[in-house]
Image (cartoon, rainbow, N blue to C red; front, top):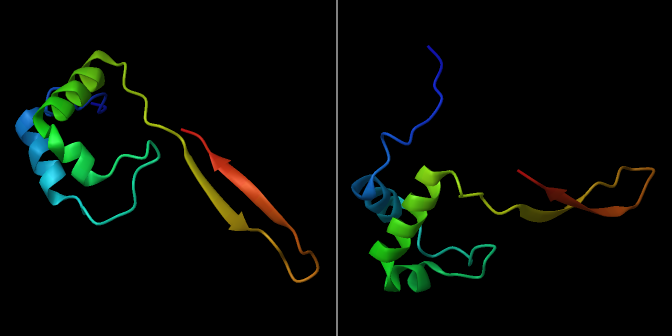
Length: 84
């Protein structure tokens, strides 16, 4: 039997516990929102996220990073973009 979805396991209590376990001192997310900003309306934000996840409308934002790909004979800096 293959695992297809975890929608039946995720609920508001699970999301609240997941939020409680995350680091709050990190940099803002790709959307510019900090943990403190998110926590102002935590329950409403988590309910909205949960509804988008369960309906299939949630799409995680892409991440951007910069990495130096130079080798001893080549000095070049390239920007790489990860997409989901």
